[in-house]
Amino acid sequence: MSEQKEFRPIVRISGVDLDGKLKVIYGLSRIKGVGVSFANAIVRILGIPSETRIGYLSEDEVAKLEDAMRNPIKYGIPEWMLNRRRDPVTGQNMHFVGSDVDFAVREDIERMKRINSWKGIRHALGLKVRGQHTRTTGRKGRTVGVARKAISEQKGQSEKGGEKK
Image: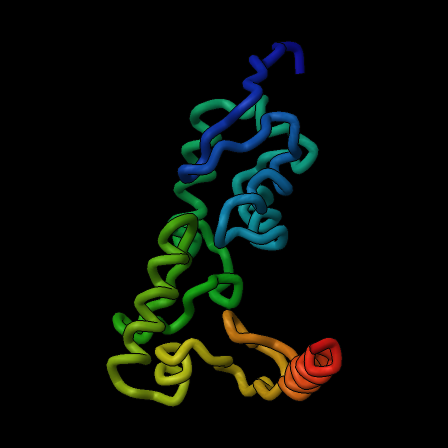
């Protein structure tokens, strides 16, 4: 490594500003939809040393990383590493990164609501979806506590007030 590459303190990859001091694998895992295992697979396939800091990557390497995250099957990433296998709409195996993940989740929830599935109804009502108990947990915005205590305190104060008069 005779030539010294230029260090950039902030690198933008897939719409996310990443700290240039981070190693490539851990920096990529900060992007939504990319975990450590997926980032490790991309880095190995592209031949980038895993100890490299993001700030030392060239523009070409950054472009290759973005393309590999968007089209992992083209680079030989196994299908089981993708985060959107057998898409309900298209039936294809895909991998979403960044805001595409949020959009896909929102669309899935809306589809469940439209077809009136059990999960869709629970989402629409703002209740727990995955079978959790709701008797004592998941209370949002409601008064939490026992009503009898408040009632007994009011009775006690009214009795004391009656004695003073």
